[in-house]
Length: 254
Image (spheres, rainbow, N blue to C red):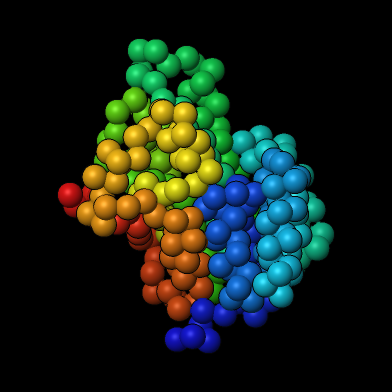
């Protein structure tokens, strides 16, 4: 079992790797021996993650890319293919949120959130599936949300994109399972990421109210989500395919 958790230098690509769940997932994979390919929009944040990877004794590289832009993803794919002949794991984590009712939501904001939360996953999977298929037991993990499964006030575009991401993951699992490529999605519950911490500090979200909705009565740490993600990407989860894994402290059963 423990040996199956190891990546032994195989390459794993993580989007949104500069902070939060993306950074935590990258560090968990690095700790398990992966060479992590860190993708994001801010070099300083990626450098911070890479420094932590190095402290763990692992290797990595950084790439600036706005994954909501098709042209940027194609350029990223060319750069990665020039350095790597195969890819063991792809983590589509980059995402954003915007709170609004449908009636107050602008077309521009709708398109912006759809682009980063959903279109980016399509672009990334299309670009990197060929590299994944060159590896033994490759895996894709799409980071959705419990709000792709249940509703929440004033989050129509976020919930719509995360629900679509869950179903896109299932469809890709159907299409690529016979070729040995596992595809799963993960649905984190309330997690104390830098973005969520900012919401709480600004008064946009009430921590006590959020924690009262969780059976464990606390928020997750980013590491707790990253650890589950790393397991699902490893060979220890070799029979987990087409699954939607909820990691929410019991919120969806309360």
